[in-house]
Length: 355
Image (cartoon, rainbow, N blue to C red):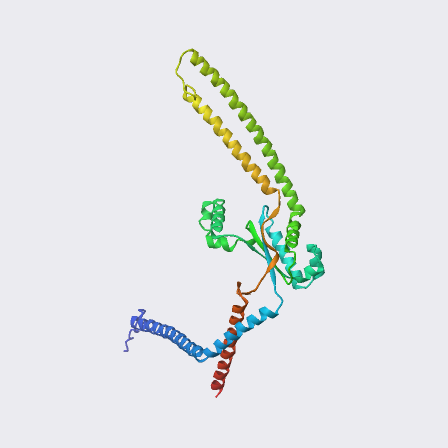
């Protein structure tokens, strides 16, 4: 009689040795991959060093040609003149101002001299000579920090803790800063002041900003009248108090009582000081009010202007930086030489790869 043999039980335990081996192989492949990348980077660096060493003379020649070309073009090409004006925005005119400058620049790019002439109310020859417009904020890092601090104070503490300075700066628009600098470039010594004045006038006469200005000035004038009346009442009250105090002193003299100039009691001293403090606060508010009225007198105003007839601009812009023309041509020719030689090396490599 046959007996049924028990089936062997399958072990559910994980073979730790095999697992460690798999992990070890994964790490080994990972480190080999990193090593191959570092090796290739090192080989590329070595190749680049020898590439520069091999063609050093060619780069020197390209730089010399760039300097010579820069000198030649400065002497033979028509000069470019530029002028700038720094303005102060007393209202939120930034977006409108930047849109206007962008519109003028588009007219220059499209060579639409007629429309540019009408927009700026200048002669056709002056409009035709304009090469471009630019505008940028005039702001220091300290002012940016002050703006950030003022913004944080307007937020709830929970929200403010999540806002970083970098986020604030990256989300801040250039036109929001109070001071802006407008720059104009032209092929001739135009009367730049006339162009700047027209740009300012186009913003100054905007109906929306004129209404805002009128409302602000009316409010400030009303506040000034209130402050003047309060100051008048304060002066009257002080005079009355002095007369009362003088009578009290006269009585005390009659009674041969020792007194002080402020009065005989602490209450007298406190009242006199409170009246003086109130008068001082009203005067400070009045000065502040009149300063605001002076600021609101103009929607936007020029605070400094340089070279109304323009100065010669010998700079070139590369990667957002202005550099001299000679340096620009040196960099340009050396870079083009580098690209050309690199292209030749690549072609040679392809020939070897094909073989």
